[in-house]
Structures are given as C-alpha cells and as structure tokens.
Image 1 (tube, rainbow, N blue to C red):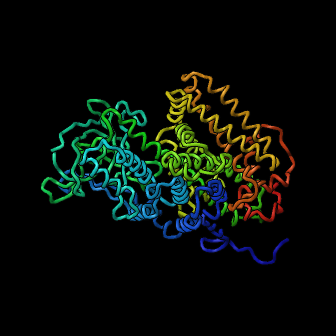
Image 2 (cartoon, rainbow, N blue to C red; image 1 turned 180 degrees about the vertical axis):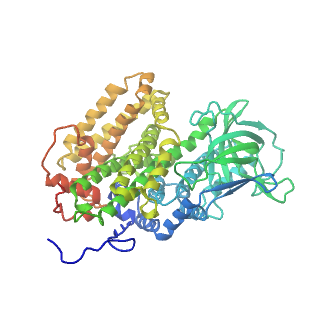
Length: 635
C-alpha cells in the first residue's frame, strides 16, 4: 500500500536505532549451567543464592567499564631511566587491578583451600565460569596462583622441608589463598623458553647453589633462598605477580624453584626486582590486558621445590590445575557468547519477526547450544574428579549410605584414574570447541558481532581471549601425546580398566532408569557400541600408531564420555530446577549420539516437534513456553 506521507531520509541522529539487547544474570539465563548444578546437587548445597548474586554482579555496568578500561589501556613497561640506567617499571591499568581485586575477594582461588570438602572445586569453578567473560584475563594469573597453592600445600603437608623453607612457603601459601586483596598474592609459572614451550628438555636457565648463609630478604622480610638463577624466559604471563614457580637446570637435571619477584636492596632502604627484568612485553592477538613478557633472570634468588632433577614432576602439579582452569574458562567465554546471542534474538527483527521466532536462526543456536551442553558436562565432570582426588575423606564421608547407582563416581581410585586421562582431553576439547562456538555467536549478531564498541556485547573480545586457551598449557598435539602417554604408560592398563568399568557402571545405571523413561534404550545401546569400538579399534594399536592418530583417539574418548554424561543427565527424569524438561534432556543425548547429517537425504518438511525442541534447547523453557511461533517465510 502506498503511503500519502512524504518519504523522510534517515540521518546520524534520526531513523531506526536497534534496541540494545539486555544481558541477563547468566546464572538465571543459562539452563545448561543450572543443570550442571542440579546434577551435582548431592554435593553442592546452599550455593544457589551465592551463584545468583555473583551472576548478577559480574554483568553490572561498572564491571563492563573496568573491562573497557583494561582493554583500552594495556600494560606498559619502562626499561630505563631518563639517564639510561636500566630499570623495570611495569604499569597495569586501573581496570585490570580492580578486576583482579574483585576476583580475589570472591574467592576464585581461595574457595577450595578454605574447607576440606570434595564439592569445593565445583563451587569454585562455577563461580569462575560466570566470572571469566567479565574478568578481562585476570583469571590467567589466578589459575597459576591456584596451581602454585596446590603445589606448596602438598610440600607443606610433608616433612622434608627445612625450617626456613617451611616458614617461607607457609607465608607464600597464606597469601596465595587469601581473599583479602591487600594481602593476597598472585603467582607466575615460568616454563617456556626459546628452545620450546611444552617441551622443556632443552631449558637453558641455570640454577646455582650459593649456600644457606647467602643472606638477604625479600620485599616482605622473609629470607631469600639459597639458589641463584640466571637465564631467559620467553613467554611469562602474570608478570605483575608477587612470586613465581619456574624451571631451571641444576647439576642433577631440570628442577623446580620458588622465587619472590622483589627483594630488599642490600642497604635495606628500597625494594628492587629480585634479579629479574622485563626485556619486552609481547604483542598479541588477544589477552591485551594481561602483561605477558620476555624475562631476563640474572641472579634471581630462589628455593628448590622438591628434589633436584624432578622439576617436571613438580610443575605437573600446577599444570593439572591450570588445564582444568583452561577448560572451564573456555566454557565461561562460550556461555557468555551464547547469552549475548540469546539476548540479541529477543530484540532483533528480520522481516518483521524477532530472530527468536526464526526457525533457521533458532536451529543454528540450538546446534551451538548442544555442543556447549556436551562440553559443559565433560568439563565439570573433570572438576568433580579433581575435588574427589584432592579431598578423598570428604568424598567417602559424603557417600556413606548412598547407593552406587546415582553417583557419577564409585570410588576415589576410579576418580584418580579418570582425572589423569580426562584432564588433557577437557583442556583441549573445551578450548577448541569454545573457539568454534564463539565464532558462531559472532556470526549470529551479523556485523555487530565484529564490533568492539561496548563490552556488554563484545563477542570479538571473548573469541580473541579464548583463543589463547587453545595454545597455552599445551596445543592439541601435545594433549593428544599426553593421552597416549597415559594409556601406554606404567599405569596404562589400570587406567584403561578403570575407564571401561566406569562406562559400564553408568550404562547399567541408565538401563535401570530406562525402564521408567521412554527413549533411553537406543541411546544406551549407541554409547555401548561406541565404547566397544573404542576398545577394539583404537586401544589395540601400538603407542606409535596411537600418537599418529592422536586427535581421532581424543575425539573417540571425548564422545563416549560426553555421551555417558548426557545420558546420565537424561536418566534423572523430569524437569529440574534449571527448567530443562525430560524431553529436552533426552533430545540432547539423542542429538549428541545421532548428529544431524548435512550429507544425508534432505527432509523438505519443517516438523513442528523438532523445531519446538530447537527452541527449548536454544532459548530455554522459560522463553519457549508458547511452543513454536508462527514464522514469516523469508523465501
């Protein structure tokens, strides 16, 4: 119909302006996140209010302002005075510093050290998941701080420390696990040199023993260590930390050391760097707020951790923690990206209809959400295992009188074996899948997804920062080689046995549940077939053959475990507190085992039931109660 009113052109200040999406409290908005909490409700009690409050806090306007400030004012370093005297003055932004204080006060490191409870890790990492998208990379030093605290705790519980070592390590541990930002420390983790990243055999940094009477104090008045370290570290994040755990060669091989970053000058009047200087800050694709540097070590005083020549063993305690952080951090970025996509779908119209009513758009969002759900279950199962292994007594106490069927893990020994196998898989698969999932989230916003104007909607930043997770703490090939090392190592047969026993136990439990729930029988059979194929096709190969097929082996293991966990979730039955109905839970497991095949025969009909389930999977039942809305054809 032709209008009689004259046409009016738009301008820079008039015409159509898109209503901005509203980013909701992610705890309330993310049905998958709350389903994870519900899955572990036997151990996670009375934390809903804490998570809801935290989920609301991390998306407040002042947080986004701090992110923006940290992004626009990346770290800088001054290496010389006006008159040419060498110095190292590192400057980080107010936004970075405030976000770090917020995370410390919230307990993103402290929680698992405050009580001997096997569920503490779940509580910690659920807060980290909500926090990561708003943290502007402060979780990088926090993850290494967590790893350093775990390492020091292990040694403090032993009897092999000297009195001086125990005093120094106790003070460091107290500060690493503090919630008081004025007291708390962060820690660096220095492994990478020019000769290699994960391969540390050719480390060129050298430690020399100078004696217990060498004297000197650190910046906090504690005695300096009896080792003198010199060398060069090629990639060192958390350069603004108060301490570091690092690798260096001694006469007996590669060893691990604790070193404070600063010390009191010889005249006792000033504080100076502890024999470490920044050569330059790294130019990077992402993680722009994070100070990542090349470090020159020249007489850095340090304490040996453990025994000489056992540096890899010691640093592995940190890697096991930081790899779990990498997995959950990646899922946190992905979850935030999906939250932005959902929010955009509720306000953006195409041809007169909201995107949340567009079946093709919702289907793509549902496919992304399915992948997210599978990786979330896998990632947080790894966290559950970590908590059990760290606090075995608490786990045993919590499972007394509880039948084995509803428990995801039947024993501490089983948890130990599964944790060793699944940690590198979680690190690799979650970070890689999040990179792909965030790309989908960017695309779902159209051109807006490529912009970085406002941090509330900046999926590009989430994608850039997450991509570091794919590489750091071991690339895909490094993780695949680690899995082969586990399966073909000294305890390989025991770990394989524990894995297949666990699969069998969970399938048996789900078979019992399938008597009361329709649709589970076929899923159980499909996972059973995948498990058999894994055993007969992959695990009969030699170590050399497995290394060659490392990626495929990792994928096969991942799909079986994720399938078991989605099936377990479906077998829980009716609608839980997350709002996920039993139909959605069963559909997620079905779609995981039977992905929609793009190369298969094309079904030209739009079926109302799958489309309605797409909507529930993508947007949650809260936003899908009206079923499948009418849609205006775009053809």
